[in-house]
Image 1 (spheres, rainbow, N blue to C red):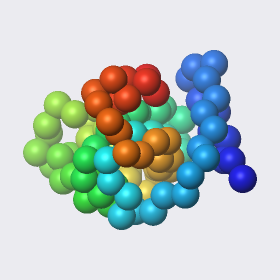
Image 2 (image 1 turned 60 degrees about the horizontal axis):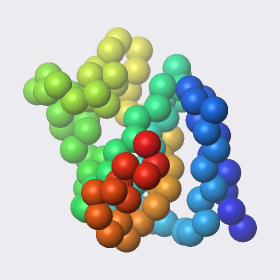
Image 3 (image 1 turned 135 degrees about the horizontal axis):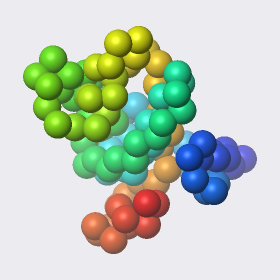
Image 4 (image 1 turned 120 degrees about the vertical axis):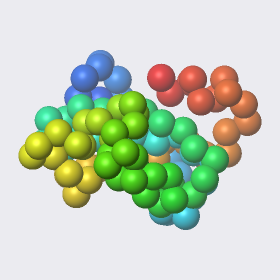
Length: 100
């Protein structure tokens, strides 16, 4: 069974055809803020749980990273996000741009 993810910002629908876990690595993922529905697309070679733990760690440092900046705004926190994994086993940088 496919899972269908519809973008809240673009006229885009993605069919997720595989099962993923927090230990999945080498993936393209989307983070959606459940408060304002803003979306961020990322890619990582690390397991997803390791990468996601980097986002909150960036916030106190005020690093110029979009997800950290978004969730450092008053009223938002990392409990207010939904994660979708779109694709795994990326073969090249071109695969990473495929989803964007």
